[in-house]
Image 1 (spheres, rainbow, N blue to C red):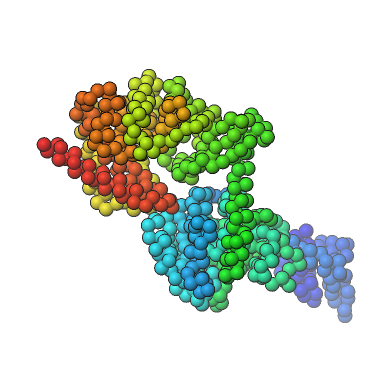
Image 2 (tube, rainbow, N blue to C red; image 1 turned 30 degrees about the horizontal axis):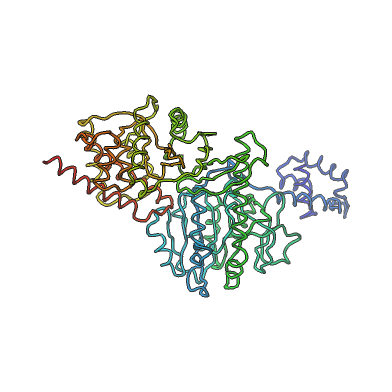
Length: 620
């Protein structure tokens, strides 16, 4: 069939030909050409006329229809650029250089609810595993410079010609900082969280989100053919059919990005926008799409757009997000429990910083569902946690675990009714000290054996590797402080290191007291064999005990007013180690987009202060 098409195409473009010419142009033998000519006649694709004894091949209407269909089919053939269809995306680009003088600041800094648009975009990206966010800035770039100064995961790239160029110029500026596939967003958009999730989950390495037409009058309309994006324009007159509207969320492979940049080298139109450069590449390779008809979103280009969005659309967006989140949680519960949908009566948020916790009512009984936060798999062994919580279950010091999945980290535990969560103030009360000291003593003197060890010096090395991976910045004089912290290992050995089952994260919020005065110790993510003095040191630090309060707490734990000096020395060493370790943990989290204010540097400086104190004690 391919050879028939080839010969017919040549004849159609020049009917004054002979078989020798056809053979030369097609690369076929004269014998093959002769057979094809006969076939074309039989199929009524050509007629043969004679003029002065010379054969003239004339393409019939049937032949024209065949050529038309074949050419149309060929247009759907594209290059397959990727051997694998899906790739985990860790980078994103936000185009934010454009000028909107009417707002007197970049659109990203307009408030929606309690946050700015840029805060919401960055949060959504980070929640879905995006580790590097490149923002192209121009108009009033100082806003972004201030915003990004303490965020090591955000890279700013400047487009100083933003007044005279389109978005492709801005996108081209990131070529030296983007080295893999990425998500591309426009900064003047607010959209549901699921848009990011769905485009990340798409099997297509190159694709865009489209929705039903918004009717805004400025839509980038889209036509789909053969399962991919075929045409895009703001001119409605260019379409045979309209399948949706592009909203400004795309996923672009590095190979396609390279092709866009290659074509842009020849650019003579400074106002070219990236979506049309993407469609130019789409002539040779497929650009996929995800259509979300009921997506709630808004583009803010004017005061009117902003007012409509904040007054009418944003609350609807939040309600929709909450509805989808609750439905997702219900699906998780139905997967892990042998229950019916009607058994799930209520789901409410129960807070959480690292993880997301939900209070769920199943058949009239309440539970706490923990959904692990993004990135926790790098810092926490769910296998160790799973082993340890089931060992602890025999001690009856934690709420009962109903379900634990060590692959996902999802945990369902019984809810403690009428519970009081301790805080750094209530933990200082003597009756609460009695409870916290007794439950720690029960853990430390139990006969359970954790398989894993929590070794702070190994943890420091692990956190440093993560910090390097996420390109975080160390504190001032880190190398010298680290050397002094590591040297404490010998002092610990001299005072005798015990290995007992330990919680290792004894913040007051992990102690829950019920209305009968019973205390529970929850959240065993960092649990492992360790020196019990680590748990005491952690609790003292996190509760900000005074010297007198520390003395009372130790008396409660040891059951004596006389505390051996070696225990006091170890407690001070572990305070230093903890402050140092959690200060690195903070830099890692901030490198991934979290903001902990002065928490990290405060702990680092306290570690330095206590290092000075322990050195002074040794000199004495």
